[in-house]
Length: 444
Image (cartoon, rainbow, N blue to C red; front, side):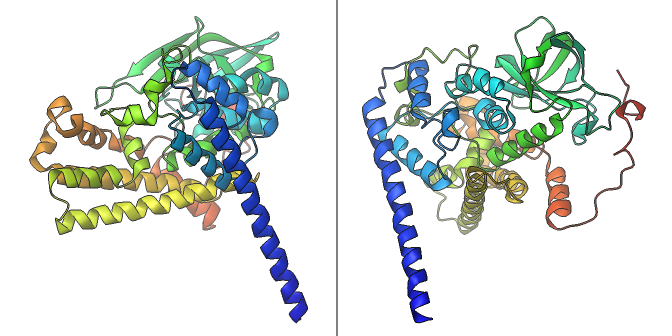
């Protein structure tokens, strides 16, 4: 037994040494790349092409699709080296967060070859055409329909709460292609060109004064049959992959070069990359869209700095609130790392997808409360009249959205109850009924 124990110890030690060796190799290669290739005088387009070709833009993706198949720990090392060099991150947005991972998972290869590179280089921006006026929480009730016309499909319907549709080049579209099948079947997942006459994008103004979301009307819009992601009429599976990645991303506060929109319509691609480096961005206040999510991603740090700046960091109530906020942020960060590790290992994310999304809602609300408490009477000011150009106030106004988008808090609780705790599912008698026979809104 003693020799067996020693053998196990040796095996464990060898494994640890091997893992450490791989980590050291990744660090050395990443450090060399960023030191030699990062040039602030490049355009964003030029830099993102270099980053994409290196595999360090999305290092967790497979090697054959512009990644390096790295683990979550190794991806963290790459991030450390990029930040140390002061280089701009890979393109942010729904392309790298949602479309890319879904296309990598479900293919087919010709779709991967057609779209993945433009995602990684930031050449194309994406939006998500899922939710409808009558199909939000019950997404499977979607009524947008696609009818085959030779090598194309003709799409008619309406989508809503579509983030960034006014700037998107391409869209992830769920449309019903077989109304004779039950509602979770007969749905297909398409890549659709947003720049065509049959698509009308209408921004929806929020309380913040911004218009992050849109309603989108599709009238005889066209999509190629070769742009089906996954199997025809089996788009629900690909859609669930997109939603899982969305909740992972939102639960971790997003990623990529935040505040730098990719795509041909944003106007950023031909700007100097160095103007968007962490050092340059840190030298001036930035009110990026989605301030609430950005605040949640950064945890308590910006509010701790604000409390120190305002001279209230010794107030026991504020200190207690900040400590609680910091603790929630750390729990969320660890859960996010666990999700990314599962995905990097080829496993589906677990309950941390939903708990992370719920936690970011809690963090946003807690940030709103303590932020306004720190500001006191100055919390009534707005815009440039307010401390930090009104970032806290904008977060407070935007905060209700975080509990709604990406799957509402109530939906996440249902998922946890049914899939994690094993509670009975909500009753439903429509699982085996053809969609055309359901009384869902007004059938088109």
